[in-house]
Amino acid sequence: MLTSVDGIKGQVFDYIIIGGGTTGLVLATRLSENPSTSVLVLEAGSAHIDDANLLIPQQRWLFMGKAEYDWNFKTVSLSDSQRKHNIMPKTEYSLGLGEKDWEAVPQSIISSGISQRASTLKASFICLDRRLLNTPTAWGALGNDGWTWEKFQAYSKKSERFVKPNHNTDVLTYDTKLHGEHGPIVTSFPPLISNLEEDFRKAMEAHNVPTIQDAKFRIQFSGEIRGTSPTLSNLDPSTHHRSYATNMYYQPVAGRTNLKVIVDAYVTEIITTKANGLITATGVKFVKSDNTYTANVAGEVCLTAGTIMSPKILEMSGIGDPAVLRRAGIDVKLDLPGVGTNVQEHLYTGVTFELTDHFAGEQEVNTFDSLVTNLGLQQELFASGKGTLNLNTVEIAFVALADISPELNAKVIASLQTEEKDAGLAAQYKIQAEHLREKVPSLEVILAPGPAKPPLQGWDASKKHISLCFATNCPLSRGTIHVTSKDSLAIDPHVFENRFDLDTMVELVKYCRKLAQTPPLKGEGEGRLKEIHPGPDCQDDAAIAEWICNNVSTTFHTAGSCSMLPKELNGVVDPQLKVWGTHNIRIADLSIIPLHVGSHTQSVAYAIAEQAADIIKAAHK
Image (cartoon, rainbow, N blue to C red; front, side, top):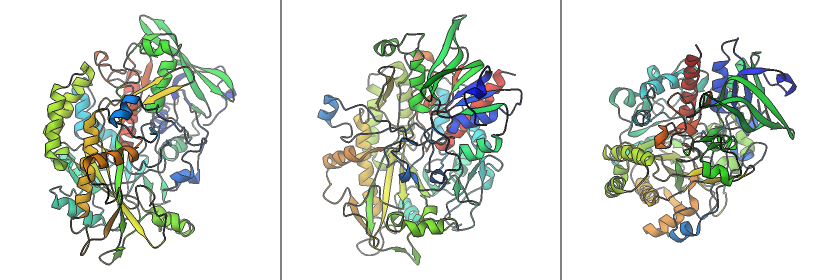
C-alpha cells in the first residue's frame, strides 16, 4: 500500500527495494507473498496509478520531457577527439534507464513502475520479444552458473498471460504451448496492423531470411532465432490498455499490509557497516519533500533502480572505483572498480519512405500519420479497439551481420581476435566473435508503420509514411556511468567508439534501401516507397555515416553498468545477484546484464525479476 514517512516510523524491514519500476514491483510482489515478510519500496517519482497518459498506447509524446514523468538524462559533451573522428552523434544523445522497449525516437526516459518517473522503465512502448537463445547461454559462459536459456523461458512464461488473436490470423501466427497462460502480464497482438506485414516477409525471404511462425517455436525446437516473425505487445485486449508492472503486479496486491510503498522518495545512500570483512547494509537514506529520512533494514537491500541509477546509488554509498569516488568527494567503503562500466546500448534509427500507394492489395495501409493529422477521431475510436491508437509494430526480422555484409562480418571477427583489451572485455569479445562466426542474429530490421522522424515538409493528411527501422543489438563499444560529485552524474555511452558499430549501421541503411526495392514490398512499377530520410542525395558511405551520426538514437535498452561477472573480470554482482564484497545488497535490473541481449528488453526485465525473487527466497529459507 502507498504510505507516508510516518507510516514506517520505528519499523525495521526484511527487504528494502530501491526503485518501484518494472523489476522493483515484480520483486516486491513476489517477496511479499509471505505475509510474515515485510517489504518497503522507495520510489523517486510520484504515483501515476490509472494515468490515462500511460495506459493508452502511443501516448508517449504527451509526457516525454516533462519532469513529472521523465528524468531527462543527458550524456556528457563529446570530446575533441570524438568530434575530430566523427565517431559519435553530433546531436545531444540521451540514454534510457534500460527497460524501455523498441520505439526510441524521443530522447528521454519513461518508467514502467508505480510512478512514471521511476527507476526502471517501460512506458507506452509495448513490443515484447524473447529471441535471445544465445544470450543467457553466453551469460553462463562468462562465469554465471544458474543463468540459462531454459530458466529464462520458465521465468518469462511465469510472467505472461497470452491472449490469442481473433483477427489477421494469417499474419499473427503463434503456438500457445510456448506462452504463459496464468502470469500477470497480458500479452497479445495489437488490434490494428499496418497490412504490409506479408509483403515485408516475402521481401525478407527474397534475401534468404526465413519467416518464423512463432519466434519461440524455432528457438525451442531448432535453436534458430534468425528470421522474421510477428511480435507481441503487452496490451490487454479487454481494455485496450497497457499491461505492465503497476496494474498487473502491484495493484492486485496493493492492500497487503506487509508491503509498503513510499513515492517521491529519492534515495541518496545505502547506509552500511563492515562486519567479518563484508559490507552490510543497515538502512537506506532518502529525501522526501526536502527532508532526509532513514529506513532501516534487517534483511536485504535490493537495488532495482535501473542501469543509470543503480550504479549511481552504489557510488553515492561509497561502493565503486576508488579513483571515481575520491574525485567525487565520496569516502571509499568498498573497492569495486566495475561499478558504472561495461555500459551497452542498442542503437536505432531508420530509413523513412512516403507511401505513394496507400493500399496493399485490397487492404488500406494503416500508419501513425493520423495521430498527428486527426488525433481527435483516433481518440474517439480507441475505446472500441479501432483507430490508430490501437496500431503497433508487429513485424520484426532478426538477422546476422553476415546477412547484411559478409565482408564486414569477416573484418569484425578478425579485429576482435587481435584487439588489445582488458580481461573482462576480452571474454565478452571472444563470445561475440563466436556468435558472428555462427551467424547468430545481432541486428534487427523493423517494419514501422510511420516515419522514424517527422517529414521535412511537415505533416499532410493526404500522405502516409512507413519506415524500415534498424538496430544494432550487440554493440562493441562500451560506455560508463559515474558520479562526478554528490549532485552530478556523467553518462558517457562511448557511441561508435568502436568504429565497426558505425560501419554496421551504414550497411544497414544500404540493406533497408535494397529491401525497399524488393517485390512485393516495392509495389508495382517504379515502386510505392519514396525515400525521404535520409533521402536520395545521401549515397556514399561517408554521407550515410554522417547522417547516422546526426540521427542515431537510444532504444532505451541501456544495460551492463553493474554487470554479473566474476570480480576479476570487472564484475559487480555474483550469480546470486549479490554485490561482490557485501553481505546483503543485491541488484535485480538490466544493469546486471554482462553481455547485451540480441532482443528487446522488456521480457528480459520481467524474467530477471522473477528469477531474482526465487534466488532471494531460497537464500532465506
